[in-house]
Length: 88
Image 1 (cartoon, rainbow, N blue to C red):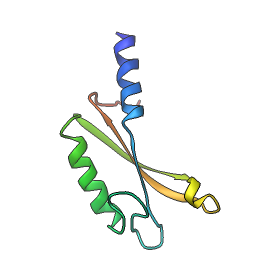
Image 2: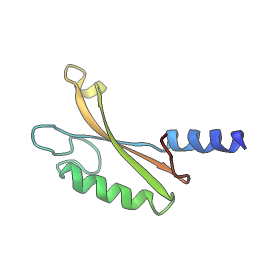
Image 3: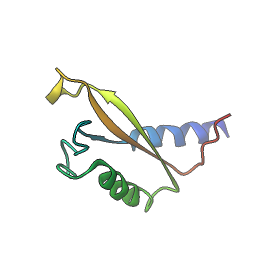
Image 4: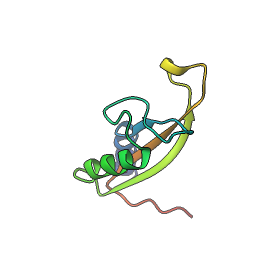
C-alpha cells in the first residue's frame, strides 16, 4: 500500500499548476489566464482539474521565475489528487 500512496503523491506533484500573479493588482502575469483576476483563474483551473481528479488543494508560494528573476513573484499553486489529505 505505501507504493500506491507514493505513486499518487508523485502524480500529484507532477500535475501541479502554478499561476503567477501581481500582488498589487491581483492579475495573472503569464499563461492562458494572463490579465484575468487570480481568483477567476483559480476557479477555472480547479474546474478543469476536477474533471480528472477528485480533490484540488489551492495554496500560494513566492518564487523568482526566470522571466522576472529580479523580483519575487507570488504564484497560486493548485495540487490535484485522487486522495483526500488528512492533516494531523
